[in-house]
Image 1 (cartoon, rainbow, N blue to C red):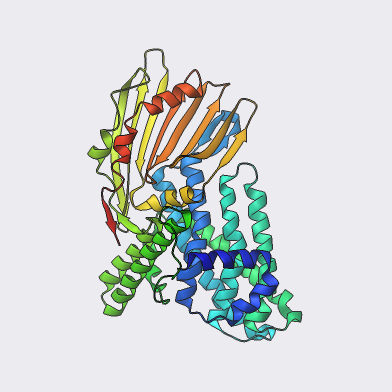
Image 2: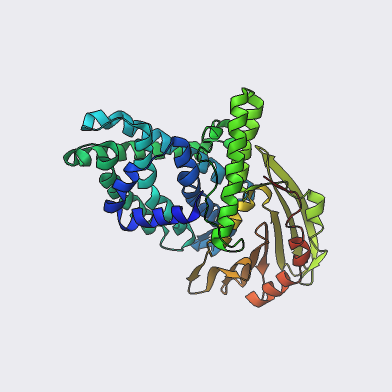
Length: 421
């Protein structure tokens, strides 16, 4: 994956689409190369951002002056399922665009159909960042969808060779199909217990040959992304070999490896064992004694996450909750947010909520002065999510409680269980 080329393509298709579509139409490509070089990464943006929003930031509940969050397991299942079904949905819409081509005076061509669908979806995928922007997400997502219709309208004549006069009807019918398919995907994501029932991810193997010749500093955002891409490409190649072997079990395992590499930051990661994570729950926190504690590790499709939780309380009823999560195989989701420099801030009459970078940590804090409660958390080492929440005299008190934890010890385990691809 050429990161510089991908970035330039995104910018061109969004800012100068009329000039870019003929260039896209003339480019040599395959279904596999379009997925590997473009779709796999761009389609991950909404899934990653919604995962961060639903599990780390949460949704405000005004009447209750609180914040609702999904558990890490539910959030991860939803993100993976959404991502996988999106990848399939793009291909299905492309098949329909191809089938409709003669009806509107165009030429049937599967690769060209996938091009026009994938690049038209760009604005919607980029708009997925809006999940992290309080109050504006709906408007930005809507704008991304509307602009995507315009991109499709401009792209159908050069890619599918349809007369410009028939592009409006072609676009309208394709849009209706995409809407219906989005409903089906939304229903599937809500009803499927996990991504394990869906197969075939491995068919999108790499066919592009060697990685990009352009290289970036390993510590830069582009460099981190390039390393991630190399890991995914390596997993794709293993999936291709496994498929050709004719061994169903090997093919299934390799397909799971592609998914693990995609959301694991280019590496397969074994999450910490429960007893390893539980030692980071201190006996006391903020002068309060620990009343309950638990730790667990869960996995699916060869991927794992682990979580340790504890509640602290005194005789007056004041309480604090400590939650430590090893994102394990899903650490790539946190890495995406870190590389992108994710930031958001919201002020209310009684408090605030914000997410920002502090050094190499992604920080989230919230305070409600009316209820005298808040939370302070961080993603450490692009792998561990640690959060302290509860009643306090002010946010500084919760920050102090957070700072008393053995955070450096946890960060020292960043490479434990990591298996390079």
